[in-house]
Image 1 (cartoon, rainbow, N blue to C red):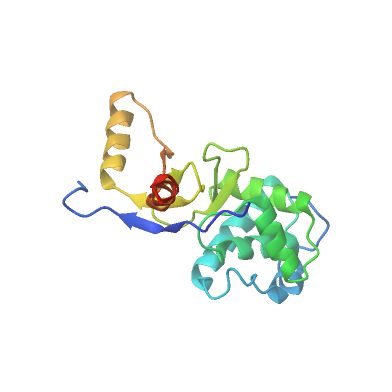
Image 2 (image 1 turned 90 degrees about the vertical axis):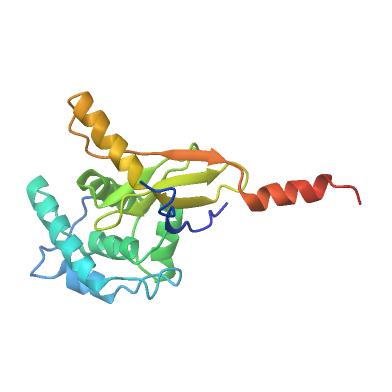
Length: 203
């Protein structure tokens, strides 16, 4: 079942808010010969922030160099596809998006590249209480949390500065340097409640 794209992060009102495959090195041009020909899938066209993508590419390049891994065009094409997307996606959705463009990328490369990007903090990984892992781009994007419908599995993002305040306070109290947090709230969305009410209401 394909999950709906998550809504854009919602700030509460002020009143309630206090891979390793053969390839050439960049500069030679595994990146330009492969990734430059890549057009993001139809689901994600028109969203890509090219300036941010260049920053992310530089960070990814440094990470690959530090780990002694090849900088292949396939990996950069996957990175670009991710940063052209909005909301959350799973591995199969990302893989299908690449195939839609006729790109020969294996699932193994997709998994491997995602692991590298998560390791570096350029992509976030979520479980949302289900077996299927969900991912989203994270570099340069506002910290947010999630509300998940247990019926239709819709994911809605929200921002509340108070949560950051709690994180800071707990870190100071317990002498922890907090790196990040994950807050997921589960419930039944308004649409699902309305559908349930319609099914049970007398004719």
